[in-house]
Length: 112
Length: 119
Image (cartoon, chains in turn green, brown):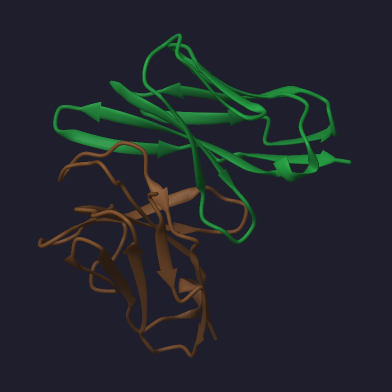
């Protein structure tokens, strides 16, 4: 069964304390791995798409990496404004059926 | 680029009434839009895929007669919650893929969401 698991469920960091969020996936025919940021009461904001193992993408303090089993979202020297829920989703393709499978998210709080 | 808007952002209605939520792609055309529902502290649950000019595809367990979807143009999809009840109260979010062809998609861009409260 296709599944995406994110860990930890919640993470509290001090400002400047770097860390990583994990997204483990088991899907049929991975066609893409997506990272989103969601603030309370708002829709998810697109961050990155990764398509193949070994791929890395960066944006400001965030860097996303992908292996054949998992993806990491590395946060370097986070600031309080990085506090949000980070969601990952895997695009699975089996035959003509494409499906986006969502993780439950990691709630990040960065203390000043 | 790739901006998606939703209207209204918040709606409160009485039980038994119908509520329409609009989803618009502002700077691109979207042959496919998606409707999600999200409960507090839970992830996104796909309700249906909306295809321009054709019937929506509903996920298992989602009542198509209760959640009516219309995708009449390349920039507008609507979700109507018919005969709403308190259990329909939730956060509804739409998304669109700015580069996907019909039946395929890459990254999705999301609207800001609509908070529905049914009294």
